[in-house]
Length: 306
Image 1 (cartoon, rainbow, N blue to C red):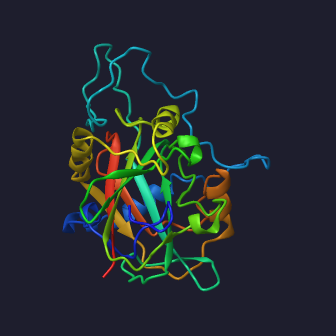
Image 2: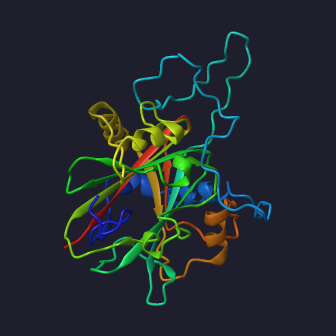
């Protein structure tokens, strides 16, 4: 990723593409997409201890993992469909979880240094700054990959120096990339420089960790042996699987409300791991998997500078 700082892009214009483009039949139930996503938020903001400093991104102990020595799968989590055929016991089959959903809001830094909602089609110039706020409707794992001008992909999240290399995301607890609470101001935004280029972000949200992709202690150990900054790069097979998953159908709803500043509740929620309620602002863009059995949701966002 081109940057003057470790966590910034080159100068860009943001465009929606790929799985953000809806066929006509899917447009008919856009409101159902937004409604299904937002109604899974709690009606009231969940209680949270005042001592909480920041979200915990490492896997909780209750999440099951493969036993030592067991063979890991060689592909991304599959997207099975549910079956209505009762099991041998005659009981109804287990009900699968809700459709995976991902909410995205793009913020730009205004002249006062505040984060303001901006339309993804807005044209950015040298010196502009943006930040992305993400929200999921289920617990899972978030990966963000980047390519520059169609070149070699690299993983920008999780990172060895971010969130203790964890990437566990809780339902409706917002996540900022980059974080507004970074120690240095220059690391709190993606800053666009004078270098033209096409940056594409890939957002991969899964119910279980991706096989063959290091996180937590494995990622820290990987980067310890390499020079800083360290960016893990997926192998050919893993990247092909991400590209294939990108073609899975999604239903999308895009808001037309922009210009509003990020609220205090959004900032506090993302920095301290507090879930958003139905009273809080909605994501600008919401994507949902078509099938309730989907184990992953993959989408992309282009960042282009002319």
